[in-house]
Length: 393
Image 1 (cartoon, rainbow, N blue to C red):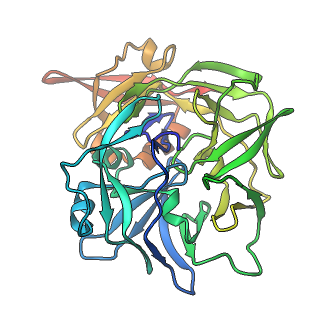
Image 2 (spheres, rainbow, N blue to C red):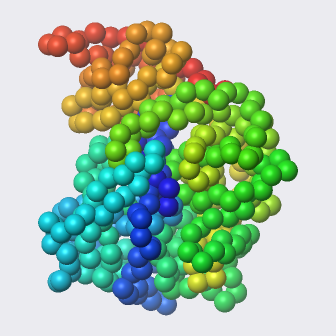
């Protein structure tokens, strides 16, 4: 309901994404068929975003982002063309206004899909919006065919199993329940908003599996304390332009249910507060929309601690041939070295960028002391070796 980031920004190897909203009532799927047995599908974590893979026809495998913070489903033009339902609005009909991260709007075409399938679970006559996923595909390093919004799963129990990198679909939660702690999101719009405490203040936060950040905080009325910052963060690309958020490490403990997250790194926002993949990735979470609860299961040996944000200060827009610098964090090693927005990177540590997917780059940033970037200067190249620093300790 808050935002969709259409090109994920690399910040200390962390790729930030979120959800988005459309100014209309959230759509419902026409028919959902799951069957009596759970449907389990493999996933892959990229920067705390869970991407699910499925092959239900000869054109697959398909890759989808599951975005519990999104009020609609997005699909690529190819998927929309292939599964457009009879009587679906033609492509030249009026467009739908979609609100993006910084409060601006973009226009997308609507479509009704006669079919969308995840394993043996089938969704018929699905309302969706058509979106060119090529930027998302470049950033994730795999073709993305759509972003599946929360209403799609209104008639199914959806489990995001982050530790095992998979999703599970059930027709309903078993009568004897599931392990974990149930936290209600009891509101008439069936938005996964749960109560969060920061110090002595309670507020509502969206469970946003489409965001890789640990937590987004709207500080209005909360007066949060900071152990570090706020400082200017990485450039993030949205539906209608780039933005540079403020980031900080909170000095207090964030609590939801019985779970405590001490001193998390947070993005400050003017929009709705949310819990993102930086925290959600420690859990297996089942969304039961029939009973308006989210069931959180957590391994007690897994410490809920948010690591420092490391990086050279560069954010990128990616293409197979080069990575374009989308932003440079002020005061970072990249800024000190004179790297500018718009510069083109052809190699990382001497290897062409085509060989670097987000996961591999994230691992490099988390462990390396220095990284070598080769920049394109007209017909020549030059190399700069940049230190990796704790941008938010």
